[in-house]
Length: 262
Image (cartoon, rainbow, N blue to C red; front, side, top):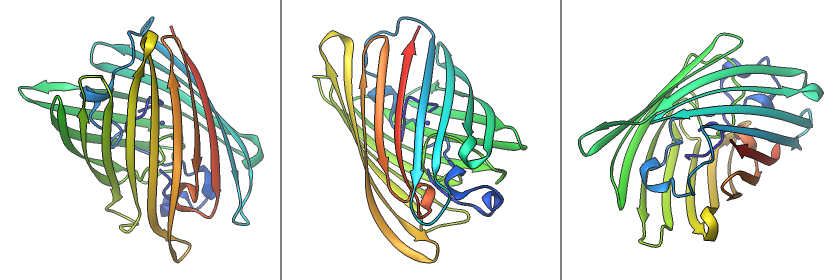
């Protein structure tokens, strides 16, 4: 789903075998934009920069447990956005710097949303989504990587397709439905997001993301539900999430992210 942290699934491709499962924080900026044109309803940002710090706690499944920290700085100019980030988990002995770019390109009644990401360890990934509409928005996208290890913060399959639709009311409230499904290494793994965004007085905004995930985890088919809640103010924002079987492993994750725009 389109999120505000790097535009921050839990998939465990074979390329992640040498890394603790919980660190394959695979996610592509692809599914992300879920109807970007119709959902960016928060008040005017105070500046072009956004700094986000995320705390991640994984546990369960008999796998290594411990905290992780991610710091991400995003710069926006027009329809283009560039970002750099660093994920580190001393408990799991893993760290990775990364960078990326995404944009919105208008083509008549259509919009193209490309993204590119690189990271240490030789990771390269990208995505392309196409959407149309204003009050009603529909779109689809595709993401691909070179299957190298990657710590990111979207928590949806990377090598996947996405389809989404949203509706925006006159009040500014937006309801979006998005499906992200792996179509490369784990074709039965998918995340279904139902996202409600509601403007609040003073340029603030409430976002609630209900997650339904299903797919094979260590040879067993599983279904779980997750939840993410975020609140944006003109300068500050905070998000909290519960993500069971994160990245389609046996571990569960609790996430807390805070940030500032300047």
